[in-house]
Length: 341
Image 1 (cartoon, helix red, strand yellow):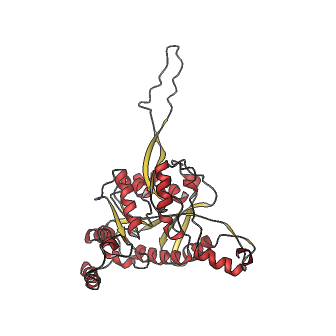
Image 2: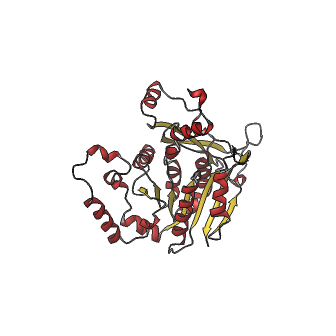
Image 3: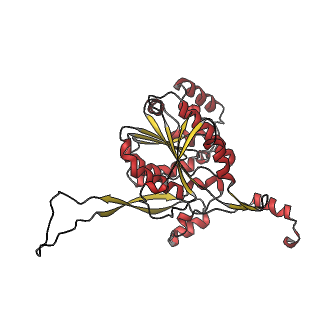
């Protein structure tokens, strides 16, 4: 009986049946009856939400002082216009699929890109852990090219859907598969990459079911997202800005991310490369310490912020405006500027 289970058995069962997590950003999403029904049948199916953000438009057309009929000065005020991003995303997911949700760290980094992105018109950008593609939509008009990367066919296809919903062209925003454990794919010669693909193809079972094309581990499913010669050229010759939004939550992945970023930041470039990373310091009560801790953040801090490989500078969030209003800027939301030493 369940009432007689030992604590160890309960913990083991929780590991086998993990609880889905839901981003605070999606807690107020109102689903249609059709969407609710689809999510019950397919928990990872996606819905489309509108994310509004504000744009400051200065309405002052001249320096002349205008007056009304009574001779009073007419005060010209700044108008706040809004724009909308359509985002395809999942609701509650397991940890491996959190890339299908929008997180507060993404909105924070979107705000920063809007505030300074006009300085990037001659730069190209590499985004790591692009997820649903919202940051890509915001950054694409600000830069020359953006290579937005993640892993998993379902995640990458959903990212493409978000870009298409917002009319972001595929020639300027390239959705690509990049495993943080193999960043060399952006640096290799094309002949080496081709030999790897040919070797992989020769080992495939010719009679395999076509349904497997949708499997994230299937080569055919990933083929449209493979790094190309043009991608490598853009990265080597043009990319100076890296973006990563809320990618820190599992230590193993954070270590892979740190190793990947260091190799790519240190790779030959005409200009010094810089990473802008947003992170949410998630605080939890742990039994091991019998106190509140933020282990994922602490691990990030040890492998990047205090690592001799990097120089990391925190950017105060009060120094740039909040354009996306669907989140709260808590003290736990941080933005970092990181370069390789």
